[in-house]
Length: 257
View 1 (cartoon, rainbow, N blue to C red):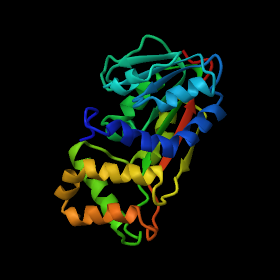
View 2 (cartoon, rainbow, N blue to C red):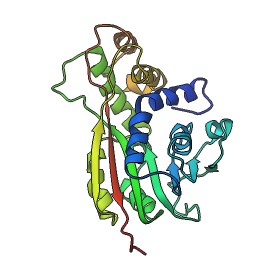
View 3 (cartoon, rainbow, N blue to C red):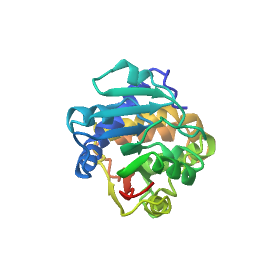
View 4 (tube, helix red, strand yellow):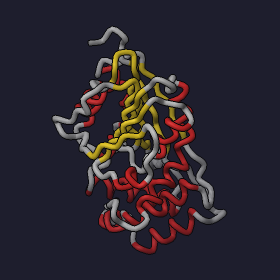
């Protein structure tokens, strides 16, 4: 559905980066990411977080991992290593451990989430931190009915039915991190402003276009409803709350083996 070879897919990913990178990088730096640290960025996408960790935080190195690394390869940077691999593979192991392991908008699309969190925790060096960010849906049955909320409900249902996306368990991440042996754990949520022309508005509009077939298959929307939602995002009438990004982190004890 979101194929890297599709025209404009890199741009769609970057709209999401524009909406969330500032808060992500600020959190990672607040957790101590900086000189001397090495990071594994799982599902690195176009590599915007990895490059900012190198440029702004002065990290010693970042290993960016993705199943398709075409966007990463297009923008090489000193200290950025690229690995084409599937983190869901049972034998996935980059061969070293990292002070920071980070994954954003990755696990929500994957099955066996608990196993993957345990596997990622195993890649954290003693004294290091695992940081996970994924979407949380703020479109409930009590949310006012607008073209936006109608489209979002259809999108989440369509994505779950086709590629397995499931954001319902994202609030359980702190519990799962602790279950993986990390302590202490904490979490926060960030919701970018949904205003006309904003990066997050453009991200959702592009995402609906690419997932339109899956949205229509739910029976919750038709083509006219999706088009109306796109127009609504770009209008002054838009009065809605975007999906939030929940970030949870947990530390591996310094004496862990």
